[in-house]
Length: 366
Image (tube, rainbow, N blue to C red):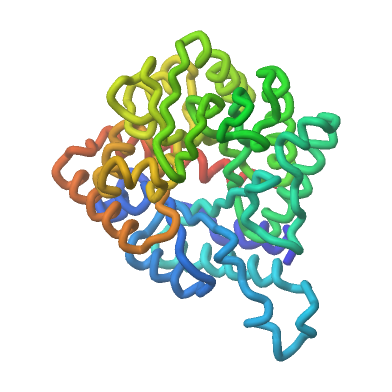
């Protein structure tokens, strides 16, 4: 499959959905980005039918098994056609969502490079951010563009990268996922990465706001508590500020405590921290949570309550990346909060407009 196929699909099926006339059920679904457990595209159709999500997120576990599809036609050693099959599935999903829901959707993946990559060989495997930070800036841009071209050809429109965190601790959680220890270096390489993706028609999401460089604990397992003072945090915050000025379209927050910014809530649920991003740093793009199935959340509170609190704090999309029952719990909690006005009309309109602008950006890419 080629870019021409994707582009023709986009031209033939424009998004004329009225985001401001959504029912509560439509709004609740649009506030969610969801994943699923296996390789059956029927699972995706079921998710669209039940939840009408705003986005889908793919993982390595969802990659089509070429042996399942091609064992009768091709030698088992061949890697051919699996990416094409993946792209065919995504285009069909987009068409199905448009037909059933009336709009297209965000299709995302974490293809950072190094140890965080979701699409296996024969997709191109990026080096880690640390390794890219040792290359010439132009080479990093070129590598990102190569990855972006493959993502575009497969039907994706969002890469949940680059990481904007500093590699501040010798044995910290972030490690090789960071471009380096110097803020200016991180800004230069992250902007080159973002530009390379954009040249290929893929949008970026910077993470993990307000900065995970001081984390030792992995938020997939537990709750990081970052005891930095405001001066230490400001170094990382300035990276986000500069990337926002350069046009970063989406940001992901993190499941960590920052006592100097909010003594009571994780960043995921913190109105002061989201307010800092919106008001002081001037970010008007799409704001995502990290996965609500991570250990930092499930050890902290119920996923349904977590979803509602994250939206009330100012997020535009909440991520639930695998478990259908957790997705269902989050959806029901969001819907109930909309119906009882806990999530206000103003909050829904605000997120709807950001989502609409983001979708317009995806259609305007090459």
